[in-house]
Length: 393
Ligand code: PMP
Image 1: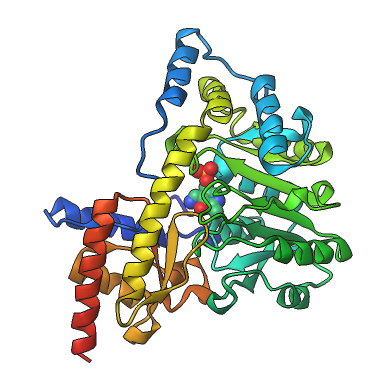
Image 2: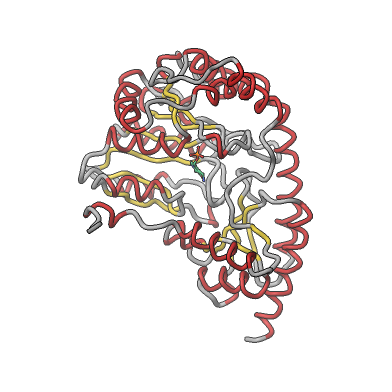
């Protein structure tokens, strides 16, 4: 009866969800599971943002808005991009989306035809593989390697470019590696992009989550790049608003006009009162964001030291996001085996690196978007589990 369309073959269930469900199942049976698999902040949304949404509802702000988003929010986003990112966008160059998830979908749907190639990181947030495939486009992976501190390698990327390559996806700070692309790396990429006339999708959803003085660089802020770039960003991670579903795309007007045609047939517009709260987030949310960033940094520093002190595990100190990509190669297990072992043996849920692409094999992703106390407990359990494993070999 419900035989799915052929294109559904490129849409598997996410392995991250599979892990979350297994962990939740164990928890229901009374097991004390530490959730380090989840890619969402553990903080409540800052109170002033919630207040702004209540006030908006009370005022009766309950109707459709423009497909593009409200003029007020688009102005606030343009202002934010000028202030934080040094890019001069006009409100007409902004489309308010239902999170970066929708921004990704609209960018791919609007610009990739069947057979077009899109360069994507490996490891990567899997939407960048499955959404292009859904439209018959071909993701071609470039590697982010631990030994290069997860920097993009312009030579490797150039070697992958063919006459079918139309788009390049950049994600900095990165899920799942926590790596942040340096200005120098991005400048090399900019030269490539110009030479090969590519569209760039720059996913900057973790932009404010950087540590140790490392600064996020927006690709569109580099000379000549604004004209070729679709900057995707949103409120989920930095403002702890994953459930609000709010994001935006910033790009030249012709690009936004193409993307809004996709958006209008799926979502019409983002929620009216959520958009109004988004203005408060951008204009008054910075100190709350900085408090969360300071806490993430404290957790990161603890967890990275604890992991590197365990004989058998190692990791780079990630400069951004809230993930640590832990090298588990010396345990003599695959990523999936290691993640399963830690769940069964230590009741710690993580995600096998292989879930993010072949380059992730040999790693597990640990999220430190859970409380400091749980991280301390988690690292103790991890140590014991690794010791047990090493003793049994
Ligand atoms: N981009 C990246 C790199 C992500 O990791 C995520 C969430 N895991 C998203 C986009 C999705 O963000 P949103 O909630 O805005 O759809």
